[in-house]
Length: 153
Image 1 (tube, rainbow, N blue to C red):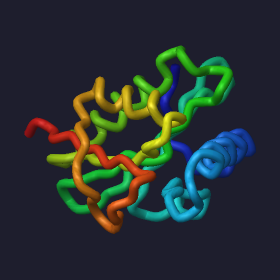
Image 2: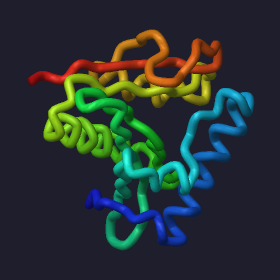
Image 3: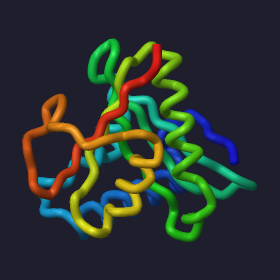
Image 4: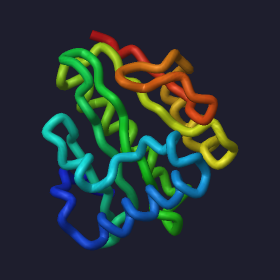
């Protein structure tokens, strides 16, 4: 697997992000879908990566800077046909390493509270993320689970 900074211009990434948004919209009420679209991911405070193997797009993820010492994990998605291959694990490891390199002391995330998001919550828990109150501009929402992880200095 190769993780690359992505400029979000390829048709493959547009299709994968569409699937990511479709998953959120199918499993959450509209006001509780916090996934970023292509424009949102091109914001200067967001770094976006894609995961490739043998020319195939496997997944993606992003890191948004909330403050000089706090990042937010965003837009984690693995293509359906590549689930179970360690794509998400590799992306979380990559994002956490980048967050440490930037000097962040904390990385947080928002994901859904519904059963469809249980695999994501389990993955984040394995990486040491624990539930926390809403952070940044998020508000308390029964359809969201907020998680955070402190990073070693």
